[in-house]
Image (tube, rainbow, N blue to C red; front, top):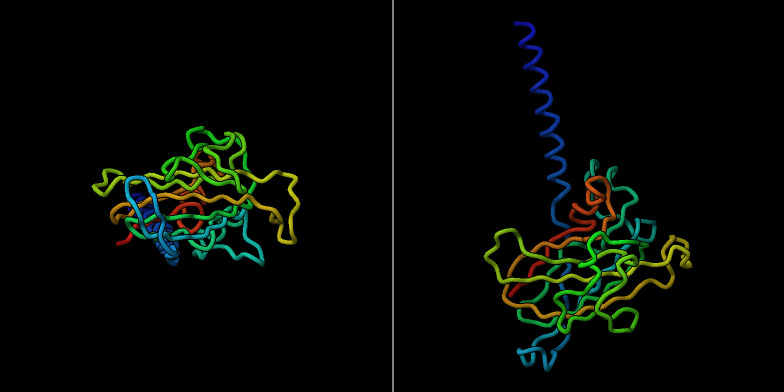
Length: 235
């Protein structure tokens, strides 16, 4: 009987520990504040759509937090786990208008290297199959020179309108001149323009292996607020 009680107490303790971790993780995984694209006019001669509203949104990617750029909000469990990790700023909860032309401007401050899947070194889903990189129109970057990606895709078995967008963000050189915070003074500037359809809610993440464990796809790469989030197309 005593042995049984010891075993039962051990099992219950394990359940409580796992449950506690799950609760903390759930709290810290709450959605960051919404970052909404700003309507700023119209765009003519879009593919098969004529004139549509145009909206713009700005995102930055940092290799780590600093006094100048604070880290995303997190609970104590994630704060320790994600310390010094890269993240998108100012939010990973993205909102863009439906049936519109949207331009996202990225400022990329991180280094990078070889991406596992060369598919994600190419632009997918933009209005003309290209992006603008430091003022030049390109369709891809070298697969060994990727810093991060911004990849939007469907939820599994989704009945929403199809939507897919993937943008490779080129790396900064390891010897790039940096400021006092350690960020490149001349970061990579990327812009991509795409057309949205009807309203829907999607997910996005980085496809460059920049995290921990799980073949470097853990840690910040699976955490909203860092390298993953939601992408909502709103009417």
